Each structure stands twice: as C-alpha cells, then as structure tokens.
Image 1 (cartoon, rainbow, N blue to C red):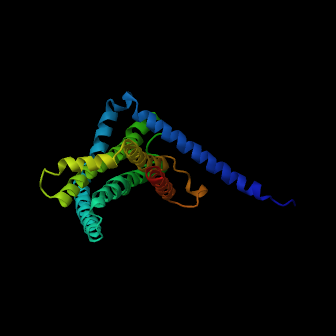
Image 2 (cartoon, one colour):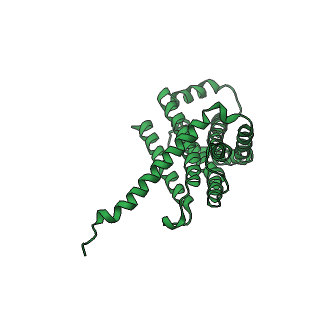
Image 3 (spheres, rainbow, N blue to C red):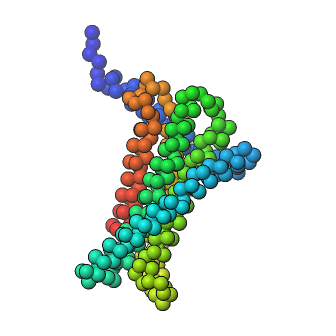
Length: 260
C-alpha cells in the first residue's frame, strides 16, 4: 500500500475551507447589494426593516447611553486629576478626546451591538436554516437576513454617535464647568484633534466596525454547514471568532493610521 501524503490529507479540508470563504463573501456581497437596492424597502421588506431597526436600537440606546455617561465621568475625572497632579493639565482634554471618543466608544458600541443584537440574530438564523424553515432565495434574504444585518449597522452607528456627543459634553462640563466662556477654546481643541485625516479614520473605523458585527454573524448563521462536517456543533462560535479577529485588525489599523 502506498503511503498517503500530507497534501492528500489536507486537500479536502483546504478545499472545503476555501469554498466556505467564497460562499461567505458571495453572501456578504449579496446582502450589501440588497441594502443598497430600493426594491428591498417595499412592501413586507420595508416593514421587516423598520421592525428590526427599532428592536435593534431603541431598547438598548437609553441604558447604553447611561452606561457610557457614567463610565465617561469616571474616566474623565481620573485623567483630569492625574494630569493636574503632574502639571500636565493642558494635555488632559486632548487625552480624553483621543482615548474616549476616538478609541473606546466606537469599540464599545460595536461589542455591545454584537452581544445584544447581531450574535443572537445569527443564532436565530442558524437554527432556522437547521430546521429548514426559511426557503433559500431572495425573498428569505430580504425578509430575514438583510434587515438583521442592516439593523446591526444602524445600531452601531447610532450608539457611537450619541455616545460620542454625550462624552464630549461631559468632558466640557468636567473640565470647564457649567459656563459658556470656554466654549470657543473647547471647540478649537476638539477641532485640532479631529483634523481631516483623524476624522476620516474615525468614520471609516466606525463604519467597518458596523459591517463586521452585522455581516459576519448574519452570514455565519445563514451558511450553516452540516454538523458532521464541522469540528463544532455551534457554527456561530466560528463566526464569533472571525468577528473579534476582524474588529481587532480594524482597531490596530486605525491606531497605526492615527499615531504613525
């Protein structure tokens, strides 16, 4: 008997993995094209989109904003007091804006939406596919997957924008107090931080965060493979790992763009 080479052993697994990657990319492209198509927002599709947008954002927005406000107050106070103790008060506000608004809030918004909206939605889609509930086709994608993915993107962008505004207002109140006399200098400082390059990176990072946390769980749930061909009976776990890896890469790329 001839020995089986390692290449012959790995070839089926590599082929299967490549086919899964191609299938996920095709599904992601199809979902994005449906988001941009006006026909997806007619009739039952419009009702499904509106329902998922509301359920994915409205219940989470008040308590997430409250959480960000409390955490921002603590962090801003720590930075201001620490900077004052070292005689670096002039750098406290810029540090708060860069650390809190540019980095922490978009990342936290993406993770909160992933845990509360898109990952549970991906599990629901995975179970429906396993039970063969939705028929494969454009109608099922419009009524099930596309609204869930769009709701995840909308939730990330909404939470990030609202929380950033709240954090900027709290930073002004902590540093300058309830007065309007320092408003001009404050807006000038914020404008110095948010120069065109930093603003572009911030917008792109938040957008890519929203795409990552919405598309990956949705696509993983739709493209569920038979349990016998996988190492895990929970296909959403692999989607979770891919999502966190992509978020990490996006964050690292934004840090490189901002500070190198």
